[in-house]
Image 1 (cartoon, rainbow, N blue to C red):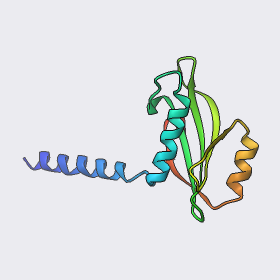
Image 2 (image 1 turned 30 degrees about the horizontal axis):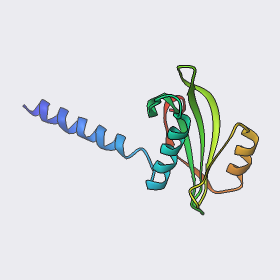
Image 3 (image 1 turned 45 degrees about the horizontal axis):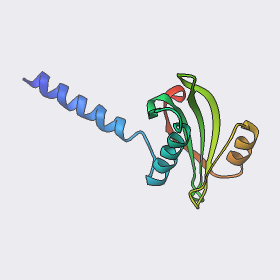
Length: 118
């Protein structure tokens, strides 16, 4: 009986710690969902078809994301970079140089990883 109780406590602890791994707030979740929506205009892609590396600027309300999007029925096939500003305007680019310039010009911290980035 004690073994089962210990097992349940251990499982609950792992679930709780796993859920706390993401630092995404409501705006970051909106950002991620807008990317999925934009890239799913033709296909019915789901979040698990993408790979996300999302950054938040701690000094402003801006977000950046390095995202591998699905293409030709393959998950995480093409790399795009997304920007989300204070006005909740979504922009995308294929330029890693622009992405890195924006990232270095702010106080960005990784708040979410999935897929290829784990």
